[in-house]
Image (cartoon, rainbow, N blue to C red; front, side, top):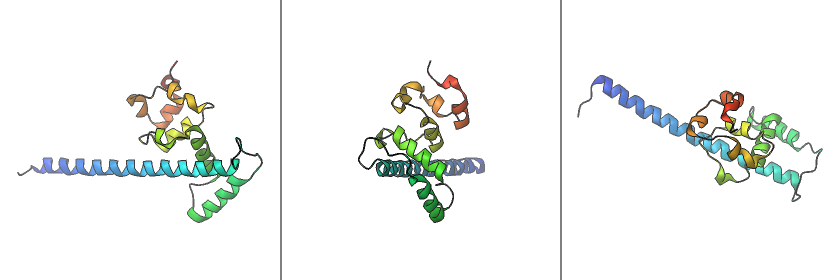
Length: 144
């Protein structure tokens, strides 16, 4: 079967696009899982078996300094705080939707009562495709 030059180009273009999408999804899933595991370790270390953490510990600041030296940018104090909040908001790994990006989960983690997130947000295919800035700025994505 012989393809025209335009059909050949379009077929190859589609293969490349699909491959890139698969790589992005795999990388996003790995990032979410690693951040969730890091958040879990931080929370468990802070609480040391207690119901709540002792305040005043400099764990995150010390940890961020060490991780920044070892890996460079990306694991600073602010991001470790976000990773910690992510785990606290979503303590069950298998309940996460890996098609959502880290940025979306970071925004969702800001809610006071994380148990209400699925009921607060109208998580439909149309809202899942919103950009993070749109999701952050549009109250119309919230159920009334």
